[in-house]
Image 1: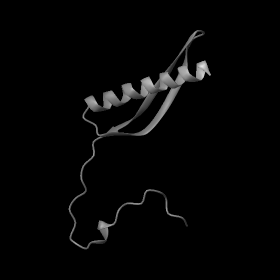
Image 2: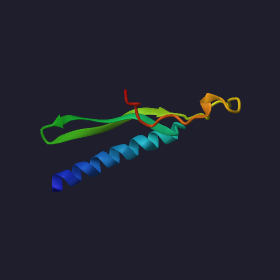
Image 3: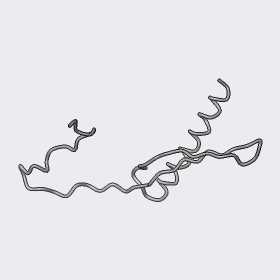
Image 4: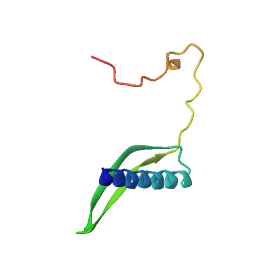
Length: 79
């Protein structure tokens, strides 16, 4: 349990650092988020959080009543 708590803290620290870097770059969000890790030596390892920082833009205005007014789906449509 102690090791699990330690690893959770390390992942949270890596995530905070990634989010801060994205904010400093002017991003609104990070997409494609993942962790990577590896051994540095027999006594230490590293955890890296990475993703793509993106800047969001509002959708272009459409004509009233256009079919583009429907919200985007949040999950894939079933067949």
